Image 1 (cartoon, rainbow, N blue to C red):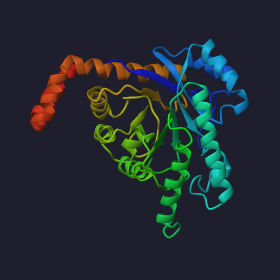
Image 2 (cartoon, one colour; image 1 turned 180 degrees about the horizontal axis):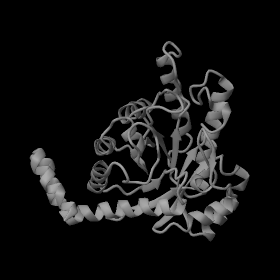
Image 3 (cartoon, helix red, strand yellow; image 1 turned 90 degrees about the horizontal axis):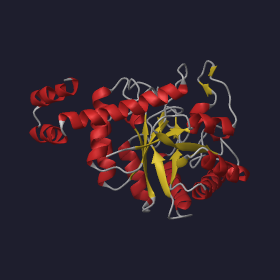
Length: 321
């Protein structure tokens, strides 16, 4: 099977950490121009409203048409503005909660106008930092009610909850695949599922392949982000540069379940050439898929059925032969 690749449009502007800013700022058209240069990628994931306002949707449609790109998904920006630092759907301030709902619902309208079926909610500030800081039950109810209200706006647009263990909060409420599934189950709407980020799975000490399998089992694997890290921080590195075997297994499982959605690159190449980092990431995914064919899909099936670690290691060595 072949995968569809997209890149986060935010990669092509300024990238900042706690110490400095990397790469020059670019306007919207310049970002689209850079994204269109990525070999094997014909999609962009767009952060809204950080990248543009609602009044510029027609301009974005023209840019998409001009650069022959599709929108793989809309990522709702409920995290980059200081107003969200105490949360969005779970903020104590009712005005902030209302704004989070309005922004998310408007993002659905934007997605529909841009012919995208996926809206991702990454609720990075919805969490806590200290013991006794929040009422966990109350905050969970806020999440359920808020997401249900958003998802009820248009049943034809999928709302995908992206989980992450920590950062910017020391504890994010939706921190693991299992908690994401619990939340989705409580919301109980067909169009609510999960955005799986392989780096967040590493960071949560998960087996990415197991998480993919679990999300697929319940029909809730809506969208996929690819990157890599050292499992101790969300480094957003070039795909497959650190966790080779786990990434290989994740790709095997995406093929096994016949995943038909986008593979979206969510990497942060601070010091690297952005285009080259994206292309190396796609090339690594393609290489791993080719290695699966080289070893033989049936041999990976045999590994799983045998449950024999020494035999599995011997078979996996064939990727190097």
